[in-house]
Image (cartoon, rainbow over all chains, first blue to last red; front, side):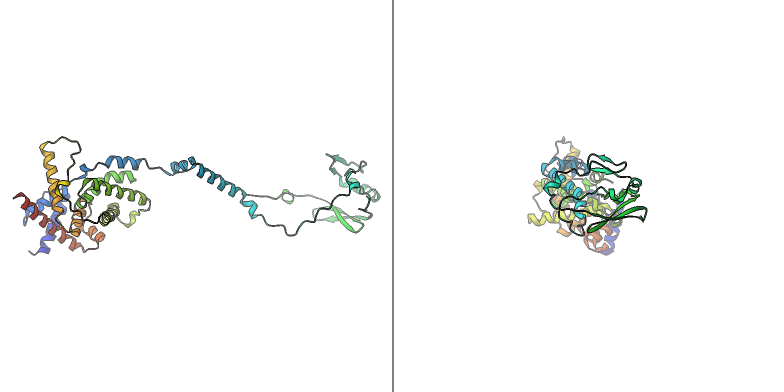
Length: 202
Length: 165
């Protein structure tokens, strides 16, 4: 039996010994006895770290503890708050720029500024609301003669009524007012909240 | 298997593997600690489909031992007196003393081997891997592993018989 055959037989029997069988290996019982001694040898009793290392492994922080530990630090807390602020302001940064610039605001002439915005005598059933807005029901407007249109000439900002006519609009009706140098439409139609308010989402 | 279970199951095997290379107990503790710290760091990336967990763990252990030998620039040969000199505070009945002497003799015998044979012996008797798995880990042929085991055992047998004379 050459060395390769001996080695193969030795390893086969060694695997059996390591699985719990009694050592034999008739060609060299001493070698197998030594291998069996190695198989049962345990040096781990010499270790002084087995328990302490196990405690460290058991005490390793999980994800929740890691986050809590980070938030306990002032620097990490400030960074976390800054990140939240950036996320909250992100929609503003994404808001598209206006297509064209708004017209500049002209100063109100001194003489006009002192006058009330809404005239004291309103046509029909008009009711002032907090002295700024007035509700003018469309039937009342229709019933009023054109000559009683409430906008009156005021100093240099002269507005002269030229013509007023009722028109049909999509989803409602309106009256076209043609004044000196311009015309505008006073509309009455149903509107949805989306027509009036911009919907923003985070 | 969570990492604590893996630790409980393989600590002794890994420590034994390290002791075959690093015969000073303090240094063996240090290297073993590094092995399990490295294993803990990469345990989440361990893929069981790629092989048994002990093959993965002993690959880490082999690398740690190689790093230890490289950084310390020495082989694992130390004076026999330095090996197995801890009693762990246990009493010294004859059986315990006999086991301790046997452990010291085995480690001394392993110290007579060249590095490759010592690594094969350490893997064979501590990892629980078979010759095929050891061959895959070391890059040797399976039959070569078997021959190296046999030759190493014969060499250590000669050493021990010489010590007893």
